[in-house]
Length: 191
Length: 232
Image (tube, rainbow over all chains, first blue to last red; front, side):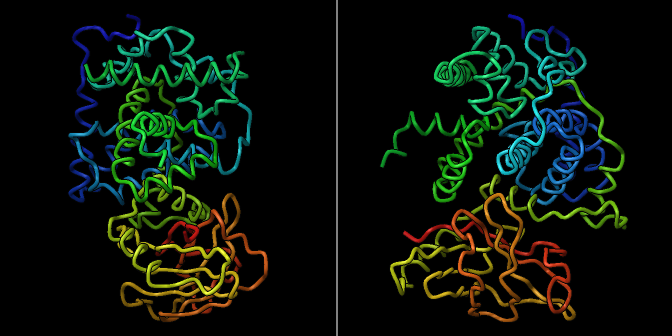
């Protein structure tokens, strides 16, 4: 189970992000800035992986945080963590940019190498929420190749075509890997 | 209708959330979500489910200027001119991704389409333009055959003195094209140019200096916007 987080991991930072977002939803600007300080590195890392260009990733992060403030009251802690909520906004904006403009820069091989696959980054794992750890655990139950396909697509915004080239597998195979993995993930998470 | 198949809905929602749908399929799915709350919920559930992956990503610290730009755009601090960036494409992309079309918007659209018979066989395009709080403000019907855009207000027009509201077409993947100034509504604007690419685009209204944007591109904030949908 390569994705299992060890015992005693702290979720202090995750909790703090949730609290800050809830305070921000009540109009607390200082809490929103604190939330940004806590969440920005992960969000920026994600945006960079998808859009590659740093200047574009900065734009995406800016737009995402502005959107987060404007839609702050729609955050529902019952449905997911603050990190997930913010990440979803960043990813949507980054993917939307990518699909509109096309890839302005090729996938960065260094970034691809850094895609978390086996062991999660220990520092990041320590900050991860319980649901994130469950997700990693469920991912760990999927075979290597299908799992890599899902992670490649998720972390880089690659299309099926790009993933097929990158993984040197026929596009139909990549598609069925991804579909099967997603459905397995769902049933594992619902257990 | 094939989009009723529960398994297909799960697959599409998951692939949308993963971001792997091809551009056209992605747009189609976004349009479907606007009228299908259950489908939107499925997609959001998937997005939140997968977002846990972000939390184990090694971080990358953004430059300090990003926070200044955020605070500037929110009006919390004076942002310096060189740090200001045009935000039209971003807010549009966001609104689409968010699937904010409310039940009221959908209802307005249905009512409007139902009571406005098409004057010709040309495919008219309709958009409900909503404000930032998702409140629908304007209904626009683009009638290419008649060469005009009909605007009907759902609220009273509200323009600060010294400013104008300018209507823009934001073509899919292209730069905004001015469609003219809106003073009062209801209003009819002529469509200038025969081959304006409305299909697949969106309409947006920005706040501009009196007389319209001096640059030919939007300079002020987006007040309302909405995706164009071909009339059935």
